[in-house]
Image (cartoon, rainbow, N blue to C red; front, side, top):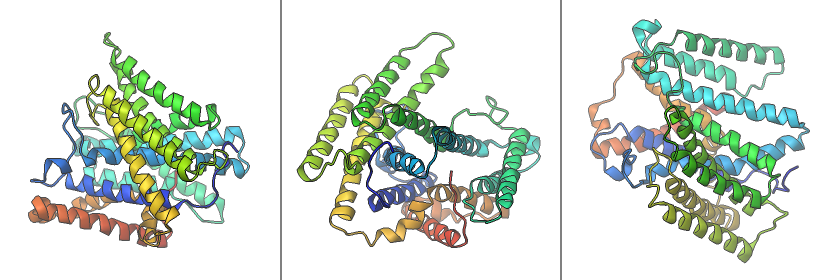
Length: 393
């Protein structure tokens, strides 16, 4: 074991994860609605500002960080050796990056060159993804391996035949990693750092600083051919957010640190002040921008996540007001399926030739529909969970 963590499922983390994924579904849907206020949309590329929408992705990164100590220590407790643990981490990373690249390319399918429509190619991709990452509960292991092999072969086939409409990327390629791919890289780096520093809070704090400094140094590269290196700077700020979540998880749940009452409050408050101060001081050099993954955006987002989680922890763990968490538990325990479902529904409707009424894509009615759509996804995930469909990387 790396850290002596509190045992059992942490409802406050589940609640934060469930709320975040539902809000993510909402903002993804509302982005296609016309006539909505600017504060309900992502800030533009060159703007020095952020909206609540720009905090959703980093909130999920923060939750990934909070879960890392529990995930790694749970596998060690089950008897996983060093190599088996690293294999699990790499498999999860490959899964996230693969899903991210495929999802980022779905909208660029050239039907004529690929040999199948965008809807068919995308739905086949999601079917293969479910075959590969389904959490099977089948006693006959050979059936599990067979189904996963079919899914992997299907993904390889779809990747080979893919031809895109984007002139800069005619073949399946990471012209951007996709949201899941970005999470995958940050998850990998954070897992390495967590193990390297053996879960010590001071080491994690140091690496958050290193990530911010690394972003600053990489952004100064302006030599020809170094553009791809500069792009890696964004992975560093994403990793800083994941490490922030990891650090907060240790503050709350590492029983060797044993922070309670006023000591816990002062530690969390001190870290929150540090994040806000650093973000404020960095803003003149690096504007607040999600698209550019600037340190000021990352640190402000981490600070907001600290506040939200701390409130949920107080409400659920301290005050024991937690019965409501059961309503979003299906989403909290199956976030990957919840994230994929809206796209599956979208391409299924496209294949069926069904279009939504225009009124559902405009103004207030569009916003209300987006909220209802998020709730519908919750019930759909709950139903799929009862059918045994649960995705696990």
